Length: 231
Image 1 (tube, one colour):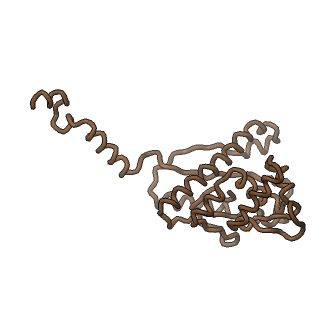
Image 2 (image 1 turned 60 degrees about the vertical axis):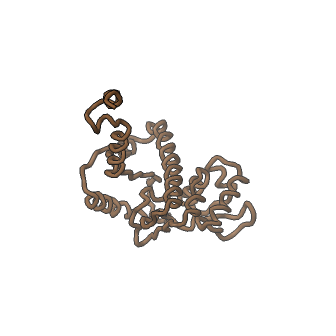
Image 3 (image 1 turned 45 degrees about the horizontal axis):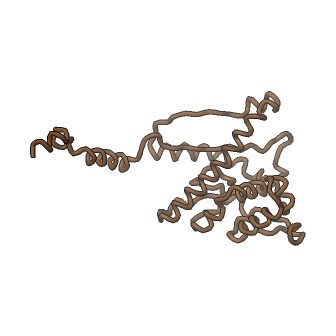
């Protein structure tokens, strides 16, 4: 998935496709399809055979999954070739999940896609740990691994993410225009993840209520056995 932050405000130069249809979201929620879409984004147009060599799948499998991605508008045929030798290209270089949907079907499809996306990305990160030492020193020092806890309001977090994305989007054009990639540049995946460490207030209140309901002795100040004996 080209953009790791699903609720991101897309770059004006490289508009994101807003995903709001649960069927389209589920169509993308597949490890092979995510891998194919990423390779088309990084490498440009690819045939099913060429894509198969990059993602480690058979050409027939890649051909099937590319057709499914095409059905839901994620990829499209590129000029030249026929059949399995027909090249495909990504229809968009950026995807974003719509933030104005609350239907259960949409939320379930979104969770499924994000789970596949994170599995896909984190597996690549874990694999990179084994090859990290093979890179020159300047690259080893440039790869960050950092974790932090912020105490912020929702407005502050939104502003903080927007500030990061302003820097992020400076490099967007290099995805679609190879001539803008400087000599010595590499493709580097950057993940922006944020999540609360505390439970939502509603869930915490429901859990506390459930604990009280499961122990009726708490309401009277006596243990359940004492209440029974007093009847």
